Length: 202
Image (tube, rainbow, N blue to C red; front, side, top):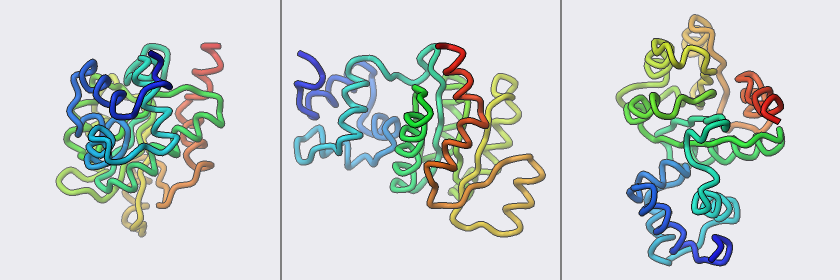
C-alpha cells in the first residue's frame, strides 16, 4: 500500500519501527513537539498537509537525514514553536529554490552536537539563547570540527542587541531576527551553496 493511502497513525508507526526512532526522536526530526507525534500515532489528531507530505516521504524512504547527494540543514532551537517554524521555512525556501534537502530539527544544543558527525549539515540555523550550551558555544564547537569547517552557520535570535551583533561579527556569523522570513532563509541556503550543489547535481 502506498504511503498516500495510509493513515498518519500507520505512517508514524512504520517510520519509527524502521528507523529505530522514539516518538521524541521522530518529533526532533520533523521539528514538532513530542505531544504532536504522540497524538498522531494514537489517532487523536491528524497532521497538517506539510507534515503529512513529510511523513509520506519518510515512509517511502525518500527523505532520510544524511541521504547521499541531498544536503542536510540543521535547525536548533529550544522553543518547539520556533523550531517547527524554522524547519518549515527551510523546506519552503528549498522548494522555492528547486532544491531537495534533508531538514533535521533539534531542541537541545548538546544533542545537536552529538549528531553533527553523522549529519554533517551544510547549513545550520542556531538559536542564540538556549539553556546549557548557548548558540555561540555551539557555533564555536562546530567551527572546531574539521569535517564541518565549510558549514554555513546562521544565528537566530529574538533578543538582538549590540552584544549579540559584536559576538557574531567576531566569528563572522550571520544573525537573523525572529520571526524568520522565507526570503532570509532562502538567502542563507544560497549563502551555504545549497542551490549550487543542486544545480551541479542536475
